[in-house]
Length: 117
Image: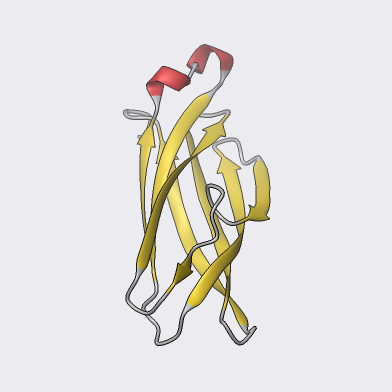
């Protein structure tokens, strides 16, 4: 799984403490069985330490089924109250036989350019 992030200045307003970020996730099935992404759980941490959790079905309105070797890529967004923060989470994946597992998304940084020391 890979994640890339971008600050979106056109939708941000630092004066109003609104910092918008786009993130693109690429998830690949590196296993030997199909798996379907059914739900997501994000933990979003603002630079102040404030934590938000987001749960819901699928990603960007989709619940992709990935056969071995296939991948799915999507772009979504996140709004922070600070110029820096982080996200991490899990996707709940289901196998055709009903077994499920969590695919973990390691913590990644959201940062407005030139906001890091």
